[in-house]
Image 1 (cartoon, helix red, strand yellow):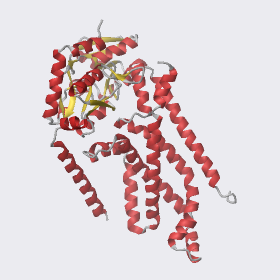
Image 2: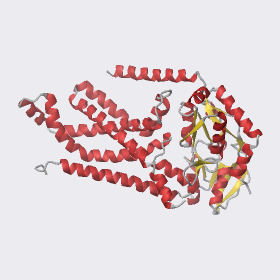
Image 3: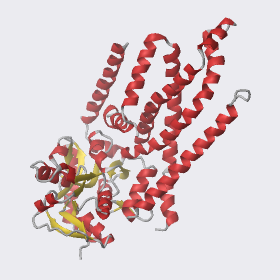
Length: 264
Length: 214
């Protein structure tokens, strides 16, 4: 009985894989154009890149950019909100046509998905509360404190590779959070001393919490941000890259940056 | 954003929470009851297979099963996040509900089955008219506990992008920076749902109870 059960399960799995492979041979772009609809994933809890506005609608730098990209592709845009950790798996699994959520290029991610050309460049920041009395002159100094970061982000990767693995920062002193705002709460509560994150959302946090201040700003882990695309789909990548280039040349992206990231 | 807007944004996720529960719970009950009948009356082989089913599904965290079903098994199959989530929760729940129904079936004394056979009922009739009516009454109290668990577990589908109560609380918390308020609102809505369900099932239990059987 068990043998037959095993056989049945393996047949289903093989069948599912075959179906999966068959659908990959055609470009997702064809599917998008045929359905006149592109399905895009985002994690709308990361202001000012992506968040929900007062009316409960999606808003932000990435949201407005993607809306324009869909318009230029001549298709309808369907948003799917998902936690950040699920987005790459959803694109790799064919559940989403693409994902835009302030994604930095990352070797591990590159194994299962592709990246568009960069549409913007970001920086990292360390933020502390007014209770913080330490000093951070070089980025590696954060190893002396309790650090928080959003799990699965490139900042998490930088801390892990440069501080935890060489033994500078004990694993127990690094707290990984599902979202950056949870980390900010723990920072305010004193469970962590330093929070590392992308400079732009960190700046948005600081603007809302007068008790917080940025002690370091620079390019460590981050840099260019890209749209996540299905693996090996060159046709779709060419189309998205072409539109990004067009929007950069027209100054559309610079205008968006001023609108959402206006720095004093 | 005023408080009523805030609450109504989170509360509009209730549709998904209730929807997931209304699929997962009955699906789990149907599968669980059939499997429990097979477990108890289906002979040795069936009992071993059911035991394996129960052990496997109770041994996997619902979230892991959710990810497997949504990202791995249904590659290329167009199963929506809502259905993938509801069905995985239904599968996990069916294993627990099978144990509930099995326990209830076993609580009805085996002598009754024998007595029913002695007065000329077939085996199927004896199960249908003698054992099941008693078992259903015994199963309601533990089952109302399972119903509450499924309502709360339905929040897991947020991981697949279903905008239910918890996910909406996260989103509005992030944009307004009022987390305590957001999560408190979610907690109140969950509590009301579970409270109403438990009350309803208590009522059912009383209604079905046999007066001469204190």
